[in-house]
Length: 422
Image 1 (cartoon, one colour):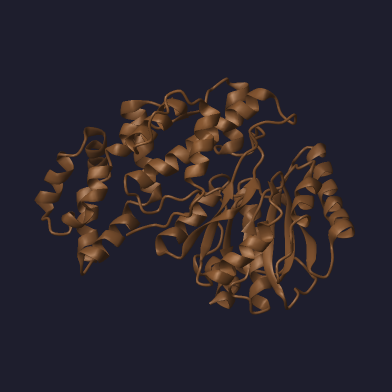
Image 2 (cartoon, rainbow, N blue to C red; image 1 turned 180 degrees about the vertical axis):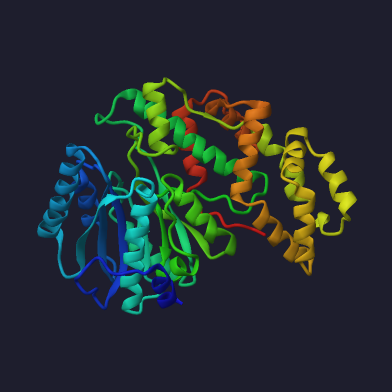
């Protein structure tokens, strides 16, 4: 299978050093216009090494026609990788630079850079016969706990059938590297991420996992099986993991932690950096989706198997009786016909439910949430909505908690592994 994947892509290896026969983990880092790469490399170098060998593959990239200072940072990043090898490199830990300079502007971006690095990692792992070898995604401005590599290794040792995992992440909430407004903003943004995740779980959505590019990993075998990384210029992590999550064998790794940077960025059209940039330059506060837009979905998700026994007219009537934002959305996406198609390809209620959520997946959920926000509820203060969710979940009284304390509460809720139930 993996030979076919690389042949179809016309792949040729970029690293001319043969991989170690004991290679088990490749950490892939896209690096664009990054002045402080050495700090992230040092964080990985400070990890306890697992029983396998580790490679750190840094894809130093920039599009064609960039300014001189970007070229300078690309060249500096390559030197930083050489310096990392001098300082920390050994037989069991190697750092590799993959130069992806002057990429076509229409394709250049974090997705393409991750794809280049993850293809290289998968090829190296599979070449030495390590199908369950781990491809870990990291960012050039992130840090990690010292047990990061060892815990990744232990996860796959304990659960060798794992396709992929999300790794616990925590943005820094204080410090002297950024202005106070950045730390305040990232606190609200991370609360939004965790609120969205917990609200999705509360209403019974089975694929509610974090999809953060700097804190995810997959096996080399699963990487090629599910078609590899995409080239999206933002949201590449979401699109990639949502190809894998619905098929099971997905886990949460909560025994270690990645610390992504809260810095503002205009490199991508959405995501953490863009949210921080809007906060700083447009004074646009962090907002989230109204809890009602989530709760409207609960009657649908709880009665999915009932739909299996409904006729076409009964399905339409069921949709009509749902809360108006949801029923309006479902009629617009022709849900009745889609559900009929799902029924025609299901031999049992159990199979129907699985196929239903392949249709109403994380993309459809997000599409509905945006529809409900734009047409009905608007965007809402994240502190207010996160408190409302906790009240629905039975946590009382929490009205006096401020944003930071709410985030710490949500972090604690997510410290225990959650698994999808279908």
